[in-house]
Length: 124
Length: 97
Image (tube, rainbow over all chains, first blue to last red; front, side, top):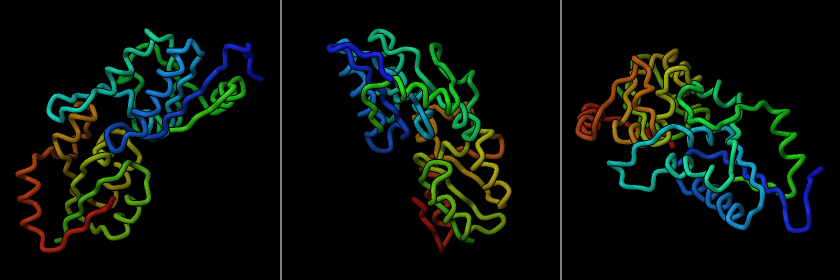
């Protein structure tokens, strides 16, 4: 059950898409930032292909906005820790050493618990 | 020998479809989100290698996604000119996406 007050609603954003092929991952981050800008508590979960957003990217040649740098700025908006699905890391061969600081690797029951204490859940 | 051009994230149906057509020793170019499959330890990489694919990954796409320093030793990094050269060698080409 969500621990909400009339002016605070916990939003959980689940990102399941990789960056750069399409705009879904970017839109999810924008949604999280928009809620945080209105002082709403945000839980951000990277699941499935979404964990690829956490790799340190190099947009020098491509000339697009760097998603990993946007993610590095999330603690400034009180969006922390970032929750990462453990099973996805194992399946996709990503070592936790390749991930930035301030993340929390979580299993499926922990993700369910995060969702249980949310007022709203959105998927990207 | 057919050339396979793969542009889909690991674990997706496009990769399964590619595997159905893939024979031992055939070249497979990973581009776009498929470059994630070149990460050492990725389950999809293991499946492609077991199928006998000769693997290439496009430099620019791997670099953008931050996988260039995590590539498996069995994957050759190529640029666009080498991709063009590969397409010239293969009269039959499959695009999987």
